[in-house]
Image 1 (cartoon, rainbow, N blue to C red):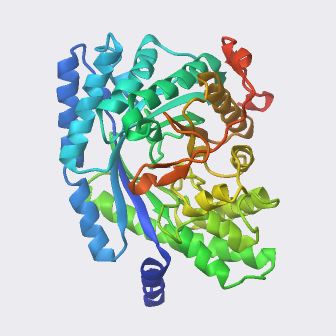
Image 2: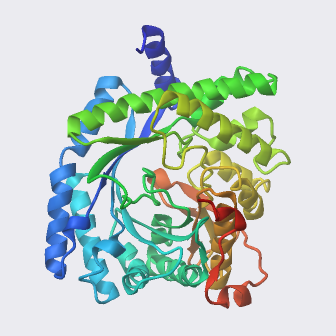
Length: 454
């Protein structure tokens, strides 16, 4: 039972420390919408989304008012569209038509984002997978709320380097297709390794084929809360530090659990998982970078940063799993540059580089996220960056991702403004040496030896 002291404590977290529920995400299976006719597939998709998600936004707002906890986003994730459109899509533009249907319906429902314009290709690409991937630049340019993700590797299967090479080209084409909006399309496109089926966070959310017909997943966020409690114990031992983070993560996750249970009951949809990630926003004081400073590094990127982030990630997970029996998604600490003012400041001060961020991804929740790079970065270099992150995920049996934005017409020292939750970012330099010969090789990087477990 939640007692009055917990209610008072939670109210303080909301009013003073930026506690919020970052998203309620409804996952919806579109497997039964597949048809040989493109028009019928689109019609069935719209009907299915309206059936389940018509009340998603009003219910989220009602729960927010009742509990006094901000629920920032209401989102939908769907079955990877490459599968749904396989029978009816004969060219890339056919997939774009499905994407437009998803976008129009998402707008009608009032949700912030819809994820699942996706393909799962860690071992190979079907013809349908490749059609969807090649449609991404046009799809991202033609829509506002759709997010796309491509899973190119896994610990069990290795890394599909043909898909990695293609995604380097697609990221560049997407940047060019949305050049008039500072290449915004790339901010809605992520390349993953070991993508989870139940992630509520964009752009990597999709509704896995192992999931129920519809579910509710909730993503909680509370960097400001963790920062506030750590500032009250500036010189504590590691034992006290860890216990404090763990207890705080427990309280944050309890709020998310309550929201998830209420939303599932109101919408008549099963509760799926709580993702207990510390997901920053551009708001001042809502920063994972500030937590790292509170732990003791002068700036993110300084020696000790990776160890501090590893500590933070582990304690967040330990606290969260005690608060809910159904923890999933990504869970841990996110380090997106454009969405975290503290990370932006560290980049501007010269403390944080892409190479250091890559090292940090070995111990955090995701990967190289929301990083703006020069628009003239070669596709082969982007593919090399994707391959590096996929290798970290594959070998370490964790989810990793790359969401980089090669901003057309801009270079190092300039800034790009995405607006809203996507924030703003300085253009970061990229290693100028080539990986073209490496990524030009065809086939797969094999799974690591420790993947052979049964």
